[in-house]
Image 1 (cartoon, one colour):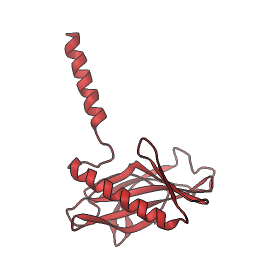
Image 2 (cartoon, helix red, strand yellow):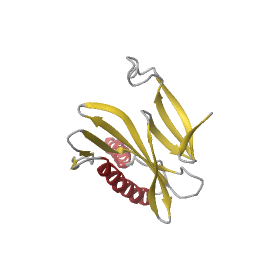
Image 3 (cartoon, helix red, strand yellow):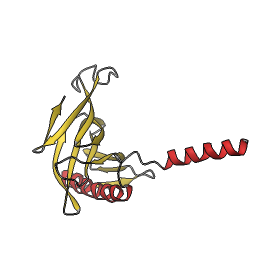
Length: 175
């Protein structure tokens, strides 16, 4: 009996550990390919923003692209895939953490749209929001209710969950 329960617990843990929380659901093989393309585009975008960029990748996949003044951090967990525009092809949003010197500044979100089997960078939006998921054309994000220079900026109760639609390279708040 103990062996039976132990095997069930191991199976559940194995399933939970193999779940990919980077994706918003759907075909993980397609999402994996899309995520790789998104990372490549994000690396190209960030290297163009810097003089003499250097790239470092940690063992867990975190990519830091920096020069003497500025740095961009790409976390694989900050890449979300799903339907953003009006077609039926999965798109991607890559959120970048940005640093000037030792200080974190407003984050950037790269909106990448699928086009003929590949994705292209459609626009970049600067915002301190945290993308939570993409589902059915709705982008759910957590946003700060106070400006970055406010003492209440990192207040955990000063966050709001907002839903957006992506229209004409802009985020439009929905109710």
